[in-house]
Length: 583
Ligand code: 4AZ
Image (cartoon, rainbow, N blue to C red; front, side, top):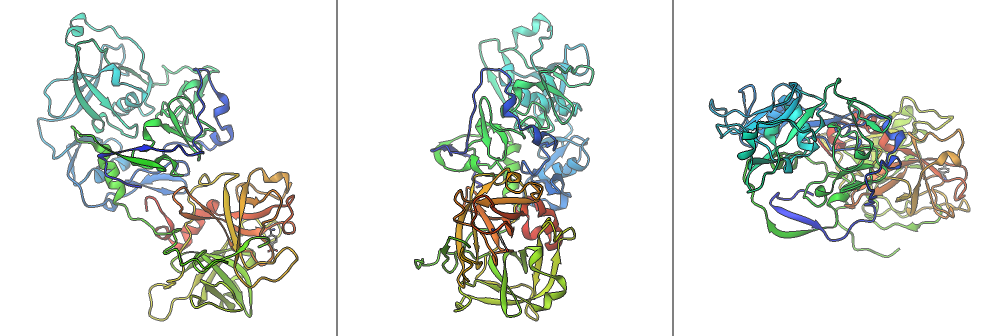
């Protein structure tokens, strides 16, 4: 949800998934998902976090976009090399490719104004009291300690060229006594933590009659670092105290201390994707959890906040809102609901607009999932490339004995089976069907169908979440089914306990019910296991693949884990068709 930055949002009801663990400063090793740490996730891992608007997600990593891909609208900014850029996005994209060229100021480049950070009164270049010279000021100023946290300190160190950020912010440096007199004047600074220069943060002038203390920092250098068995090693090599992990604050500087969490401590919000974010990001008008729950159930407040300095964080959000969006997973109109798998219930027209049937010759043999354009996802074991001309894709079908008016039939131009599909183990049981366009047409024109979204991260849905299967497969007593049926199943973790040596966690997903009453069965293969996110957007989380019998609780249904194949799918159908964030 994007909303104008001047409006404040607050939460009216906490979602059930937001789990908080408060501790009293003791290290909480049980907050960390150690297996997840092996993936070495950082702020550039788009399985865990959104990329910046000047980046795109490729193979799980945020990579730099080229400046020309930025939205055109915006005002000029000046970079540290004296070069002007048409917008902040253009500058950040250029910087992403050439990290030495940082942001300097909003507006054009002028001679008199240059932003500058320096450290004074330390014994090395890497430490000292922080001083900044703002663009429109002549003199260097100190920063108030009160506004100074690891977030700001990391940015100051990045600015000075220390790529791992800050080591500590609590060291006292000896400053000349005369300085203490006028140090009631200092700058407050607030950064988001994603900046590479302090000039991108928000500065406000404060006057108080009390000595506030001045911000200082020791930037990280290999020599200064000391690891103990109580410390946590960040992906960038830096060591931080164990008790700083999963607290919402990016102490590492690369966010690696906040991305593999089972819960959060302190003032942090837990995203169910296993990420801790600062509490202030909850209901701040920008989605931070990839699963969206930090901006769900928020109520709008009428309070207005006035922004005094050029706010590059607001500008970043504005750029984000201008990026192209794909439309998927949202039903067009909730049809006038006429009331009416193993178990399950009959579906109505328009209930499952991504569900398709695959007809091979005279029979409907499998299900499939429409994902946009002319593309249908199905199971590899359902199709053979050499039989492409024999297949038909039936869309918007309910009952194949009495076809409804919405039904559309398309022939197939191409079948792509995963190159590592293994018919013996059912590994990589995934295939794409490309439907033929009508002569002279550019699109497939399936007006009664809606594509399901393709999940770009394996962390979008978790075990125990309830999802939906649908299909024309057999009923429990092997009874034939002519009409589309659906049922709710739960995602099951730890499925090797049911299928020892046959279950591949990364590639497969089990789902079922405790009593086995709802299950996919013969004929449902290739069809969808869909899950809805917090905003009711539907994702194809699985493809019906295999299982021992049907409806047996000790043998849940096994589905192809679609998120694992996002890159494979996007390589064939094109990124822009399925990429929801940062095309
Ligand atoms: C099948 O034969 C099949 N209970 C599909 C799903 C399941 C079992 C068999 C899962 O196509």
